[in-house]
Image 1 (cartoon, rainbow, N blue to C red):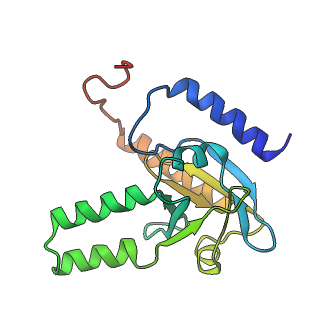
Image 2 (cartoon, one colour; image 1 turned 90 degrees about the vertical axis):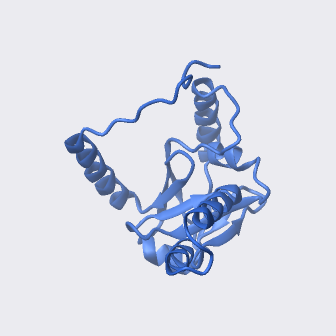
Image 3 (cartoon, rainbow, N blue to C red; image 1 turned 90 degrees about the horizontal axis):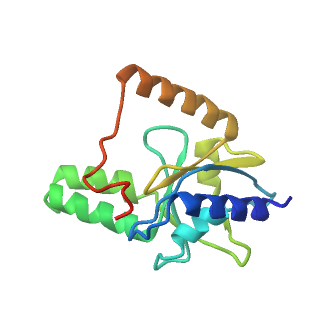
Length: 179
């Protein structure tokens, strides 16, 4: 079975569990795809579908400042980050400059080709240590791209931290009721 067919089936399955439309792209699931000699990798079909509402036909990608993964999102999420930064900090303050440089300076707009692939820039490949395979990991309003073995280590560490801290997430009133 081809990767795109598996992605489509996963997307069909995911839609059954998330039937309501949202104004924010939501990414979930983990997909491992081949990276070709030119650095091209197919963005999973469910992710492309979530990104379909975006004003930009592609993804925004930046190296994570927290780990060896790459942070991905749509243009609208970056606009929300910008607005939040401006609300929290004066435009020319040190805090705003620090956040702006961290979040935006290394971010790149990567357009989809006709087959739904992006080209991973060498600087991103180097940061993440990506070789012949890359894992796309849904993180809610954003996603990450990882080298597969590094992802497994990171997931184990994150799950251990969440378990040790007994992390939970309270639902907003009305959430999960289908209303």
